[in-house]
Length: 339
Image (cartoon, rainbow, N blue to C red; front, side, top):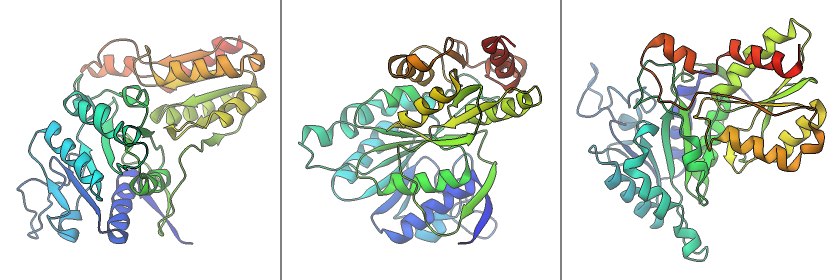
């Protein structure tokens, strides 16, 4: 089956196109997903396609009945998405930045996540919340957070954080077809990364981690961009005869604990790289799981490499110091191994 090199941004766009072509109940809504009131030089309706151009072209292709620009009122249009999902539609609703989660939090926490449980499993809520996370874009404290754990903490929500274009397409197709609400995190600094992507729609199942690099001395579990940082660090460490295995969970609810525990059983050591705040984070959760269920495999302490417990700085040098970049990972690996 043919594959092409696509960016993560274009792979997400392609997944949306294929899902909307296959199922007329799929529709998009959010702020500027069709480009607001602007028109491009060809007279199209979607000159922008969101702040990162992910949904560009979809309004022209599917019309304004299925690609809906909303007002700046997340509480309202997320409530509308929950209602639409409960009545047979499959909305893909965009929260422009995850930093705005508080505005729509009640709809996700108390409505989308709980409806199926409270109706004894008889009521489905098939909706996807797409949102943008991540630092390194010089976007300051209110547009740069990685708030995965806020949603992973809530039973009833599935949480997905792809790191390659192929995964972005395959996991989004799975998310749209799922009968439960899914939160789909897209890292703004990874949109332009390319990988080979199948042309045909090939959904990727949730709860299956990927081993991005095999190794024997230490396991690093990366959280989204943390996988990229870990791979760069592993390549640098290979030149010093340190063999690092890199695990990409891809989804955090459900979580593939088996692959992580098997890797730690092989290497005996664990590091987690997570751009999130350190308190009550995915890094903390993953460390606790391995401490509970894989303690006998460990040859030393678990190390978490995260952002500090501070807001994301706007200053470029401070933001670089804030992020768990590869150089810091290399130093922490050496310290953990006593190298």
